[in-house]
Every structure is written in structure tokens, then in C-alpha cells.
Image (cartoon, rainbow, N blue to C red; front, side):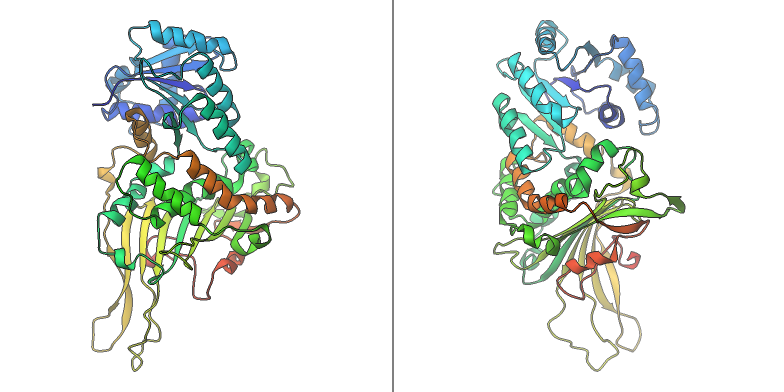
Length: 494
């Protein structure tokens, strides 16, 4: 049984809270997942009371609630909503907050602090919470949930960790990465470690290479203030895609508890071959979208987006080639790729196996076999597919490519999305799918040399047309001529 808690939101009136956090909590209410007695306390500077706040929340949910607002569910949700007026930059605010929680009979002693604020404010809020004694767990647990980005580079990530660890123990810090809450991502673990079928093949002897792609048809959507300072490498590859890579490459953990799983993920990141700055261009590629057509509509370039500097060389497309120098993966390239304004929305892990060592059908019309693939679709299609070769019906020996579909998720099965599931994990105290500080630091160590090189190259950046699958020049990252990008899940959608 989940213990009730007081869920405190810093930045309750901000964009993140309006678009994602409050709708997610409402959907948890609708699914009956929130514990009885749980309260959601919004901290803000506006001169509102709880009734004003509930009206605001209803406005936030009007276009975000799946299937519209259910009045009965919303009435129950409103019973949880409390507004607390305060300024998060004022230390006295935190003492008042502590007094409110300790003296109120309706606010549970367990407290989750959600940082829906700018990363630059994480350290300040953490310190003020500690100064007021709100990090102490004598009367109930205390957890602090922080959103990415976890630092801007290796140095800033280490400084943020050091500052937060002065006030909170690592077991209290939940670094949320919504990507890891997706059902297919979790199914990577189930697929790998609940089935013995592919284990003998899951190594350098049989796998040619691994691709992890996340493409988006949308642009930066008025997020230039954040995105132009981050770029595709920081926004997606350093966090989301490298986490997927660790799940594909990790060894079986001793147990399926949080620390055992994260220990194995860290071992993968420690085994990634370091990329010296002089080799940055051999292992990475960046580009920026220009004019093009997406979903039949003409769209402008990145430089024409609102608040983007006209001379910006921030990448909206990034690709990275990594090698994991351990016994299982030595010599197998891992290709990570992401981009904005691409042809379609697609997140997919594609594992290509090596070709057969001998051509057995030399006297037939078969010239060369296509390789086998194992494809795990993450979004928008959650599925698992094998791409294999079979004989066509008829007298002649003709081979064609077909798919063995082992889809495990139907739309009707989905009750909670990834973000909602992770919020529930934080309330329950399950940190398996949250990032540990050493995971974050080792991931930064991988990309930091490349980011340093890119920061010095401000005069030129490759481009690609919006609505395409990216620039052709990126193919130079491949180790052999017969490697190519697999853009989508289905074999016939390439």
C-alpha cells in the first residue's frame, strides 16, 4: 500500500507544471493510483487562495485531460489541491512551509518536493529546504524530484551534485527522465533477462551494430531560451539515448532492485571508449534544419524560430558513434541519432546482426542476403519485430524479407503514460528508473570532449531540409559501406 504524502510543487504556475505535471497527477487520480490522503501543495507568489488555484488547474486541464475533464474525478482531485503563497527565493518562506505542514492535520508528514523550476534554482531551493529542516526524515520520508538538464556539462553537473548532496542524501534525490518510463524501454529489460532465446547471440560475435534513433517532426516550439543553449546533444543524446544504450548493453543485474540495475548501467558507461577532442569529428556529427515541408506544410528554418539568434550554430540534429570496450561488445559500434523537424516522429532501437558467413545459394538468383534485424519500437509504435529472410512461394529459390511481429502492447492496454508512471514511482519510493548521480556524471564524460570542440566551431554547421531524415553527410560515421540508417520500425517503411 502506498503511503500518503504531501506533494509540494515549486514552480506550480510555470510551463512544465501546466503542460505536464498537473495533467499527469490528474490522470493518476483518474486511474485511482494516488493514495488516499495525499495532498498536492502548490507554492507560488501570486495572491491566490486554494479556490483560485483550483480554477487555474481546471483551465490547465481543459486541453490536456485525456477524453476531457471528468467532473467527478476533478472534484476528487480538487480535494487534494492546496495553494501556499510564498517566494522560493525567500528563506523565511521555507520555515513557514514547515510550520504549515507540521501543524496541519490534513497534510501528511511524508513530503515529495517537485522542482518544476529552472535548473539554476535547484541548488538554492535545496539549501533553503535544508536550512528549514525540511530535509530531515524523523517524522516521515523526504524526497526531492528534479527535472533534466542535470547540468550543462561535466563540471556543472558535478557542482550541482555536490551542492545537492550537502542537503539531501542520494537516496532522497530522484532525477526524473520521462523517457525511461515508457513501457517499451522497461520491456527492454524484460525482453533481455526474462528470455534465454537471444542471449547466445547478444554479443560481438553475432551483432554487426546497434542504432538508437529519436526523431521528431516538430521544431523547438517556442523553447529557444532553453534549446539554443542546449542543442540536440545535451537535450537528447547525453540523457535519453545513452540511457537506452545502457539497457541494451548491460549485463544481467544480481537482482532487479534499483541499485543493482543502476550498477550495471554505470559499468556500461565506464566501458565506453573515451573520445579525445582530436577525434571528435570521426565520432560525431551535427547539423541544423533549414526550410522544408513537414506533414505537407511548409516550415521555416531554425534561424527563423522565435528568439533564436540569427548567427546561431546550435545543432538541431546530432549523431554519435560509440564503442563499448568490454568482453561482450568490443568492436561493435553503437550509433545514436536524434533530430528536430525530421520526416516523422519515431523512437526505435535497431539491432543489426551480421550476415551469414557463407553464400550457400550461389547457383540461384540470390545475389546477397539482407541482414537480420531486431527492432524495438518505443514511440509512436510500441512493438518488437524480427526481420528475417524466407523463401517465396513457388518453384524458384527466391528469398524475400519478412517480419515476425511480437508486439506486446496495444493502445487499449495503456492506462498511464511514461511521465505518470514515473511520478507514481517517486511517490512509492521506487528509484529503479531514475538516474543516479554517477550515471549522469559518466554520461557527461562521454560527450564533454565533443561539446568542447563544437563550442569552438561557431562559423559553420551542416544543414538539412526540414521534413527529411537528416543530412547525407552523417553517413561518414558508419564503419562499413553496407551500413545504413534504419529510420522506422517496419522493414518496408525505410
